[in-house]
Structures are given as structure tokens and as C-alpha cells.
Amino acid sequence: MHIASILDRAAQLWPDREAVVSGDIRLNYARFAERARALAAALRGAGLELGNRVTIVRPNGHVFLEAYFAAAYAGLVLVPINTRLTGREVALILRDSGARLVLAHEDHRSLVEEALAGDLPALPRVIWSSDAQLDEYWRDHDKRVH
Image (tube, rainbow, N blue to C red; front, side, top):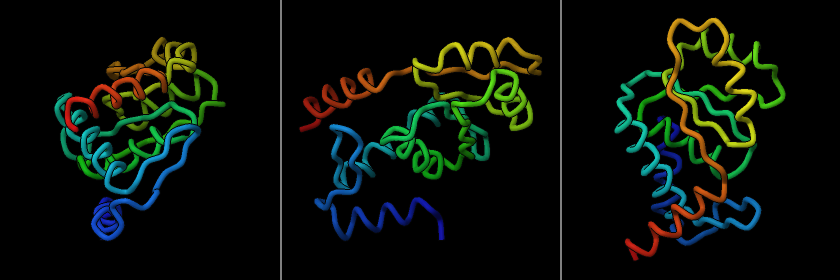
């Protein structure tokens, strides 16, 4: 069973049931699945192909969970990176995984930049965001869609 099918099934059976609570963010299954699929489309639109590695350097929360399912929807491999590692350790993970993209929270900019300054055969693209930026994006998106 494909992991994304679990979310699809939950969204089908219980679209209005609360699925995720992360701080002030509350998402039902339908909305959570929509957000994960939108992120999957954005990742594929960024030129990533099936099987490519995407790392995530973010605290636990709704965005981390969305990225987990988005990677599954897009056929990508998500490589979570512990935010308590050193820049050297992160560089090793980036190199060993062959990551093509890093999804990073602004709060971890120095960690990721230190890692990228290491000995990497190819520098992955980095997408920086804060929770506030993403929440604003989704509020604007909701106004356009609904």
C-alpha cells in the first residue's frame, strides 16, 4: 500500500474530521490532503523527478507532515534532518543522500548555510520559509479558491 493512499482514504471517508492540530493551525483531512498534493505539485514543478531526494530541515509541525505526504504523492524520497545536528553532519547527509532540494525553515538558516559551505559534489536548491510565510500563502490561496 502506498503511504499517500492512507491520506486519500481518510480524506474520502472523513473529509471534515480534524486531522492535524499544530499550534493555531487546525486542518481537516480534506484540507490537509489538498495542501500535501499542492506541495507535491510544486516539488515536481521545481524539476524534481521520481526517486529524487528532498531534505527537510524544519521543526516538527504541520509543514513537516505535509512535506512527508507531498514527497509520497510526488514519488520523491523525503530525508528528514534533525535540527540539532552540526553543519558538518548535515553536509554529510546532503552528500550521502544526493538531495536535490532542501526545504528549510528560516530559523535554521545558519545550520543549512554551514552545511552548504561543506564539501558537496553539487549544491542542492534551498527553499526557505517561515511558518508565518506559509500560513499567509495558504490564507491568500483560500481566498482565491473559495
